[in-house]
Length: 316
Image (tube, rainbow, N blue to C red):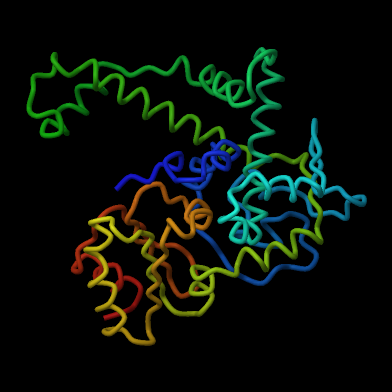
């Protein structure tokens, strides 16, 4: 069941501000939850796993009154917090209040891409910021191509997917599909490289408070427990999600206090789902005793396959 963010009711304005959140979250594979180092100079060193991308290398500093973040070419003031909250549907504002660092990181990502687009000479008059970003990213991936060999190899490995049709009948569709895949990978690489920016300074005291708030959710609480954890991201009424429920119930009975089994309804926790990169449901995510992600699966996951992953985590 696809849960593209733009289809979430009352979520469109939030998604436009965070249009690259899904890409950023897709890159978020491992979290570590060790205590913050008091003298660390960057967000990632002080609060491992809090940042997903561009703010990892942000320097923690005492900024002037009213300033939240400063970077080459732009600043973000404390007043941005209230403005961001007000743009989110009222039903989601309580959840958003505990995810302000996440929202800030998406805003900074957007502004950095806009800055790069401007520096690259993308025309910025009489177009929206989203259009500028789209134009810039399109330019970055415009020269990507797919060779005949790549297309033929994909066809040979996926004949069933194209209904067994001859290569000549489906090659154009295969070329288009593979080009799109390469373009997505190129954008992912570009966004991931933003982690290495050195010109971002962020309010250290504000980040310290947000770290506490961001960890106050059922997923992170389970990951800090010292026990292995399985999290199911899903929703009621989703057929494969409903098929997973008896399996989750059985796991709770079978493993008792040895395993955390957490269900997150993404319709009721949309921002939390976005933070963990959930774009379709159900998704099962497994964490070891230290809270590090070890495996994730999309779709219905048979009980036997679930148990294989649990064995890897030390459960029998």
